[in-house]
Image: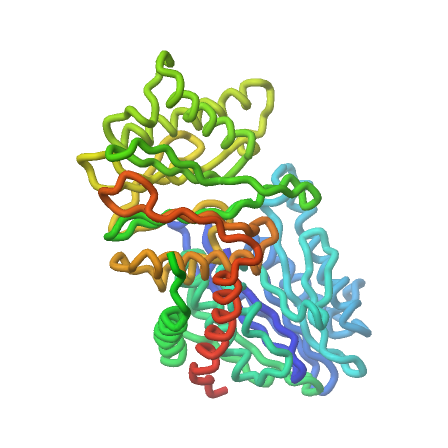
Length: 243
Length: 243
C-alpha cells in the first residue's frame, strides 16, 4: 500500500507521501509518489499517487510527456486554464491507463486501480485540492472536508480529525502529518520511510519547502519518541473508570 | 462492520465489543456481540463475533444448544477438557456454518465469513485467548501478541500498540479500550455505541465486571472529551520542525 495526505490550509497547501511499494512482502522497493509541475509566477500542480505502480507511473509519464511535446494533441498540465480542467486531464489519463490494461485481456479492474491527490494553484484562482478516483472522476476539498488521504488511511486518521486547524502554520501542519505517518508506519509494514513532503504558499507558484525525511532523520526520530511519551502521559492523565 | 478487542493481562482477561450491525447504511441495528458460558468454580468462556450476522448468530445458537441438550452428540463448551478443545469446537461450528451457506448455491464465501475472539479459563490451566478465523483454524495470544482485534481494527490500533502493559489494572485496561473505541467511533459509522465490556480475574470462573456503556454514559463522554483535549495538548507539546 501507500500513505499520502494532501491538506488545505488558509496559508496554502501541504503534501506528504511515503515511498514504499510492494508486490507481496518479499518484493519491496522505494519509489517517489509525489510529482510537481510548475511554471514560475503562473502555476504549480502537485500529484500524489496510491495504487498499482505500473498505472501510476504510466499516468505520470503521460502527463509529463504532454508538458514537453508541444505538438501533442491533448492539452498539458502547464496549459489548462483552471485547476478543475487540470483535474479532468489527470482523471482522463488515469481512466484511460486503467482501461487499456483491463481491455488487454485482464479481468481484475481493481488490480490496475489507483487513486490520486492533486493540488496546486493557477494564477487568478485560489489554491485547490482534489481527490481523483480510478474512474477518473474527482472531488474537491472544502472547508468541511479540508484534507484527503489515500492508501492506508485508517491508522493515521484519528489524529488528523482532532489535530487539524485551517489556521495552522506549515510547521504545525508538517508536525501533524509526521505524527499521522508515524502512527501508520508503526502499525503497517506496507507504509515506509523515507517520507516526502512539500508545502505551498498561496500566490507563490512554486514549492515553499520540499524535503525528503530519511530513515535516520533526527526530527522524525524525536517526534516518534516524544509522541509515544506524550501519548502515554495523556492516556495516564485520563480518569480511571469505577468498576 | 464491528469493533471488538480481547486482551490478556497478568490479572486476567478483558473483552470489549461494540453493538452496531448494518447491511448498508440504511439498515442499521443494535445487537450484542459478546456471549459468555460459565460453570461456577470450573470454567468461563467468552466469545466475541465480527462478520456476517446470520453466521455469527447461528454459531452462537449451535454452541448454546449444545450446552443445553445433553443428548447432543458433539461435546459442549461446558464440557471440553481444555480451552484449546473449546477453540476447536467453536472453529468447527464456524466453518460448518459458513460451508452450509456456501454449498447452498451462494458463491461468495467472503459474504458469509466471520471472525471470532474466544477467551476464558478452565480449571487447571491459565486463562487463554484465541482468534478464530472463518476457516475454523485459530491462533492464541502470547506475550508478544497479547491482544486481538476484529472488525474495524485500524483506527484504534495505534493507541493499543502504545498503551498496552501486561501489568495494567482492569481500570486502566478498560480506559485504554474506551480510548481505542472512541477513536474508531469518531472515524467510522459502522462501529457504534452502546459498548459491552467484561473483565475476568484469573481463577474466578465467572465475569468480574460486566457492563454496557450506553450512549449517554458519563464516563464515556468524559473520556471522549478529555482524550480530545489531552491529545491536542500532547500534540502541541511536540517540537515544531525547522523548515
